[in-house]
Image 1 (tube, rainbow, N blue to C red):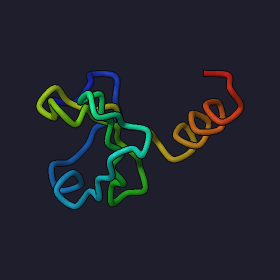
Image 2 (tube, rainbow, N blue to C red):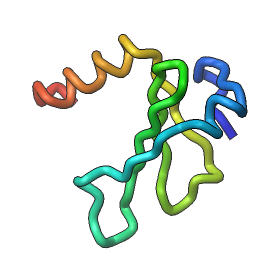
Image 3 (cartoon, rainbow, N blue to C red):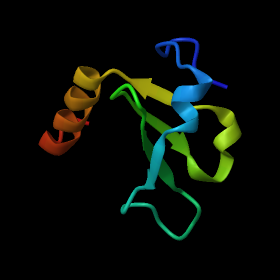
Amino acid sequence: MISKHAPSVLVSELDGALWHKSTYSGSDNGCVERGRLQTGRQAIRDTKDRGLGMIVFEPDAWQSFVDAVRSGAM
């Protein structure tokens, strides 16, 4: 499942995604994974329930999100 607000994602784009678990994920199963999609977009999903879907970011939206987190705005 993919959020209805996310950019459309092809199944083939997801098949080739490189997923990485966050180093901030704890031992309490509160884990998040980031996937680099073949198109340069980024996806975020819940490690323990991947079937719930993901949030997909265009490259500049991803960079804005990362910048906001790093600056403490989020």
